[in-house]
Length: 107
Image (cartoon, rainbow, N blue to C red):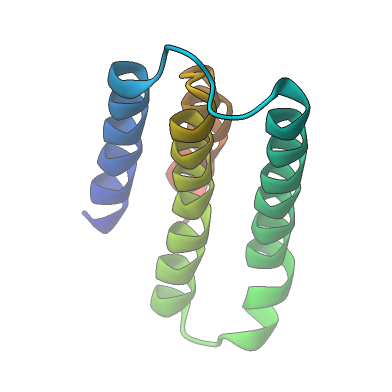
């Protein structure tokens, strides 16, 4: 049930991104590109941390799953932040779809 709530929140982030995204960007394209690379890199590193390091640190499987789901959802939030800063609603999809799939595949 918790997974479903997190997955639904990602769907809402994408909807908000497409409703509020659009218009003129707040940053020059070079800055937006740098932000995209930085936040994308952070998301990848967080996902790897959740997959490879967290199981060694946490013995309780229920807690591990919840922390993993929260880490994956943060990627979708990064996409929403990029959308609101750059006014490009596609960032919610670029970050939201992988986050959604990672949450769906979390045991």
